[in-house]
Amino acid sequence: MSKEVIKLYTNCIAVKGATQSIICDLHRNTFDVITNDLYQILKQFDGKKSINEIKAYYKNKYDDIIDEYFEFLFEQEYVFFTDTPKWYPKMNLEYDYPFEISNAILDRDINSNYDIFKAFDKLERLNCKFLEIRFYDKTYLKKLEKYLRYIEEKQYITYSIGFLLPCSKETTKENLEKLTGKHPRVSYLIITNSKENEFLPVTETEANIIYTKTNVDNEKCCGIITPEYFSSNIKLFTESLLYNSCLHKKIAIDKDGNIKNCPSMSQSFGNIKDTTLEQAVNQQDFKKYWNLTKDSIEVCKDCEFRYICTDCRAYTERIQGNADGLDTSKPLKCGYNPYTGEWEEWSTNPLKHKAMQFYKF
Image (cartoon, rainbow, N blue to C red; front, top):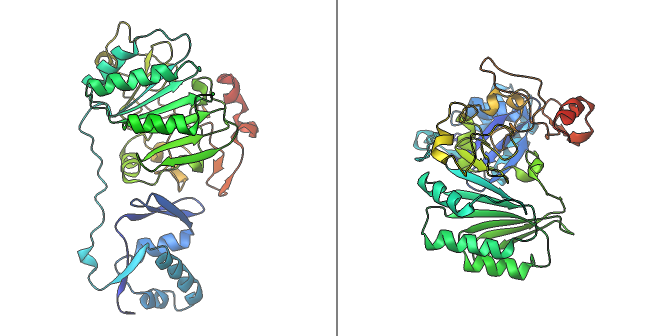
């Protein structure tokens, strides 16, 4: 076996950062932090050399470290031995989605008066499959059931619907499980301003119920970067390689009915009351951030988490831009420093205070 070369499983991909790297398992939706030295070994010798040959390359100076590295890789099932590495080609990392819009966010509060059913109809014309509806008031449960029945009776293409709801007497586990049982299109329910943080997978329907202490009462909640939101899956990873991981193929309607890239962004492309979604999408600036990858954003381009992390162009540090006039600054609400490998509370960083004042945080 010592003559067989080591090979990364095709769904396991290493990503290099400034001070450390990660291995993403795009099948199991997990990742592990590794050293940049191990990243270099994998990049240089994957499918080419055996462990003994790798040791010999380094003149047997680091045998114990190399053994430790590969013990970890085998335990985590990231690599295997083979004498036919050509039989295991690298994964195709192209990304393609057949329709112009893939996902949408609709915001609602107690004063919202735009016709949400009209919005559902227009999203159907765009073949939008993924929908999130965010409520900022507690008068939602009957409305929620009504919305779901409308989409189901119309047999719309939207098959994954998530909800963000403020905590109330009605958001019990029993009520929410009953809701997901009746409406299989519901993929997740996030209950904000809860007493505890709790994650409750509903095994019967594969939906997730998430209770969070965070109080979300307006669109300024958007853009928080945290490891809890990292997702090491094929869709996000491949899309992030070529496109913006937040705004690509996204459309939104804010609580006042304004059509935007994201409800938190200031630029509007019309109002749902008098503008079709197709008209908004076809405006010149609507897609301007779609191709801005994390590799083009300052600081993010040196971060090992850049392909499993969603971006935010609504709230940035506002200190960099490119030749096309796009804001290429790091997301404001990210407290990670890839040059030290450390996390900190973003809102206490004095270098962010000027941007925080601009956004009136």
